[in-house]
Amino acid sequence: MKVLVTGADGMLGSNIVRLLLNKNHEVRVLLLPNSSSKSLDGLDIEKIEGNILSQEDVDKASDGCQAVIHTAANTNIWPDRSEMVRKVNYDGTVNMVNAAKSKNIERFIFIGTANSFGFGSKENPGDETQPFRCAKYGLDYMDSKLQAQNFVLDEVKKNGFPALTVNPTFMWGPYDSKPGAGEMILAVYNQKVPGYAVGGRNYVHANDVAIAVVNGLTQGRIGESYIAGHHNMNYKEAFSLIAEVVGVKAPSLPVPPFAGLLYGRLGSLYGSIFNKKPNVTYPMAKISCDGHYFTSAKAIKELNMPQTKIETAIEDCFGWLKENGYV
Image (cartoon, rainbow, N blue to C red; front, side):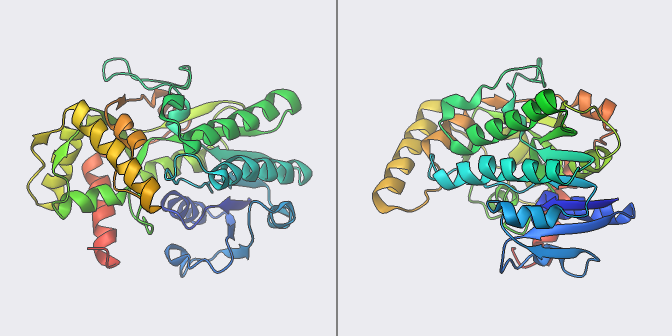
């Protein structure tokens, strides 16, 4: 089928595009004007310039497609509150849904975030039935992604819109051209992580998520959401694993919550005074004190999502960063 992919030049989007091509789908990507899109160089795809905030642009991009994979999002968490983040994540999604409805798209896959659901402990990890718990961080990124997801799922309920959502956890893998999650690996490699907070996350190979997404074109249930993750690790475990893979000494200093939160408050204050993004903000510090642990049993069962070893995800991410001059 002919598939439109937004956000195709991001890490997840770049993996999705390659999988679609491997499965002989015809791929069209919607890219911002003047986007370098280096991660897509040499691929047999149709590139269209446009902005998801323009209904005209997304209508044009959707024309003639049978499916849409909406990956594009603004993931900035500084400043904490940002009208542009909200517009891109919510208004852009509304435009994409409107276009898909007008073009009679057969399947629409919205890429959300696992944090639109409630996280749990390692013993009782969060799943798709748990309510949103991240409002306490005060981040427009998390709030707007939830609002956009709710809009998509409401369209399913009210109008029979053929959509489902895939909600990744923290991804590592190749084509991290920003870099995004790869910054954590680079920080550990460059010995810029003095210690570890008490919280943790769920980690997953970006290609595993991409497989779940592409499988979602023909598998999964309309109106359902699927958390796409793999391995729950606290930060000590995660940093130690990164250090082992890239061959450096692991951070060994535990950071108590009060110290981390104080550092975050000072970072936010610095950012507000100098109008410059700090290394750590207060919301980031709060997040680092919580265990964002999830299970992906539903995606494994219904979308046949694989579970590649996290060591491999780190290797693939770090290898790509080295090959492309980030190390």
